[in-house]
Image (cartoon, rainbow, N blue to C red; front, side, top):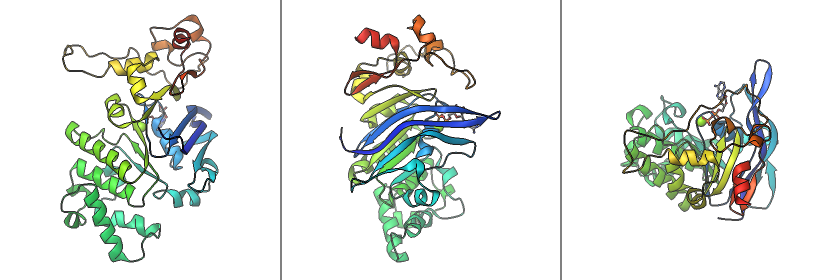
Length: 332
Ligand SMILES: Nc1ncnc2c1ncn2[C@@H]1O[C@H](COP(=O)(O)OP(=O)(O)O)[C@@H](O)[C@H]1O
Ligand SMILES: [Mg+2]
């Protein structure tokens, strides 16, 4: 993986207001996104993936707030800027040109009253990347072609409801890519799509990253997506990074019981169709205060220490870290 850093998220905590108290839902996480890399953030629903992603562009809901940490953006010039402390107007300038985002359901992000071509063209006009309307329109048609929307000049005039789910997601990708961002954040980009369309969209994201020398943060609960797309993976549980590793290493040698649980719940050809492996238990409700490991209530490997002491992130190798007393002990 590339050693040049693009974004370093350090000790990020996001809290939400609950009964007059601020409750952390992302707990001091560290994520590094290098240049030209595809990074995965994986974990069950509710573990804090979207809150992490929305912190980057300052689009957290009103009840959530970044309560500590920094997000260091490395400019090509070598300058470093902390996105957490940026003013709203400076963040807006960077949305689309530095960091672009795509979501699970494009229908909620696209304007139903405007044709998709004009919506994409607006990004160019708002960021003053094109003065001429005709030239901007031509660029949008080129981009619709690049995301493999057939008859792009005709589809330019289509409204979101006239497109299929896959085509709408392609239009969202075109909108995200039009200002040539350095980082694409894709939050569950294919969850609402059927498997064939899902594979095509994942291929397209990969291709876009390569052709535009762009990095991506792929947020998913699906280990299959991680394996096809990502160079490096962070596994998140209840707002904390439990394990991180190069993708091949994580699949070859998963060390955290939670990661192993996620991997064993992927259905495989030849498995007994009557029995699908699941992780026992549920994510505990937020109100519970943790002294020990967040996963110990669902873990089969737990030892006494797990109940009263949170494990530090243990270095297995330069490309593999795990937060587990038992895994760290086994490995030493
Ligand atoms: N609309 C909401 N109202 C109250 N709490 C919320 C809301 N959205 C998210 N949260 C809280 O933030 C936590 C993290 O949410 P989120 O980042 O959306 O999870 P993920 O994207 O991993 O599914 C949730 O477990 C929940 O406690
Ligand atoms: Mg989410």
